Image (cartoon, rainbow, N blue to C red; front, side, top):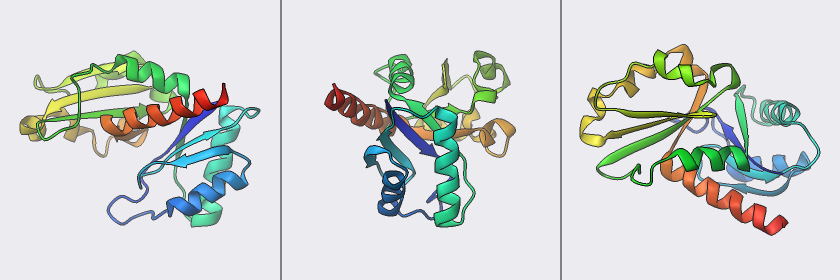
Length: 183
């Protein structure tokens, strides 16, 4: 099965530095196949056919702690999870000079449609729930008036990892290519 591991809070503002080449080697040493890293913010596509998702998460978190001496959370999503999220993203929701769209991947305890009721949204925000994520879109000119900035520091924020929509769509393409290579 093809998965993506999303590492929370690495290589942000010079904190929790993780070398992606070393990370790739660590994934391979764990027995994962066809490991591909994408950009420097902790996105690793890989294949694993026999282990349960919770075992994979524990292995990755332990390996990162052992090799980088940092304690971070890892979220693992299957190709099907990412496909379903991408299918919920309107084509017009992009990251550009005029628009910002983020995919906020949720940990299981917060993964429910009712999460939207806990968010402080502005009328300028376009927000949707997709199983596994909150999809948040706002025009850049309105970003400072958006409710998205009110998330930082909240319990909900500590239980999500955020990627911009362009990154998520690229991860989906990488995963799809790996799936097709397996067939």
